[in-house]
Image 1: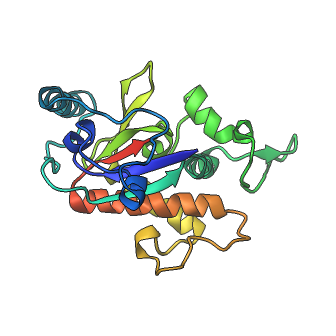
Image 2: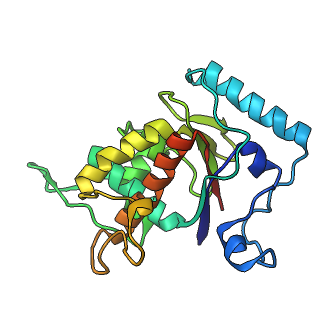
Length: 233
């Protein structure tokens, strides 16, 4: 399943004034799959952006700092929800590792799983409300939602029924920096040379490292350019 990461003003995204990565490569004749492209009018967009900022200040305790709502998109790229899931599962494993044995619990090293239900640590955080050191990475939907370049402690669930979550790209970057050290990652997607990949083909954590590489580049760009990260899936 495909997923686009967009770093751009929310007003541009919500009004549909953007091209997806595939549209940029192949033209506007690309048939969109998944959710429909937003096409809100200017008044609706302005109300949404203003309301979101107000909620972040009031409910999440966000810093009162502006983000860029006027510039051109900073970056768009294709992602994959499975890589994001594997990355979140690796993060959750750091707080809630799988163990074996009855008396002296032995930690089982993390491995990528085809069956998401085997990611017990991730499900403990998402379904059981267990604590995590990586909330802005883990507590987020895998097909939609934003991270905005403001600092606030916990992600804001804007719409609980549709699980629409807004996180902090500032805190997301810090969380990914910590995970990068555990993974031995020194460069992200935007720092690789042409033809380079995030991980070797036979790397058992290849999906996790790819997931980290792309999302770290997005978070770093978001913080630098003061624009939100948008999941569009």
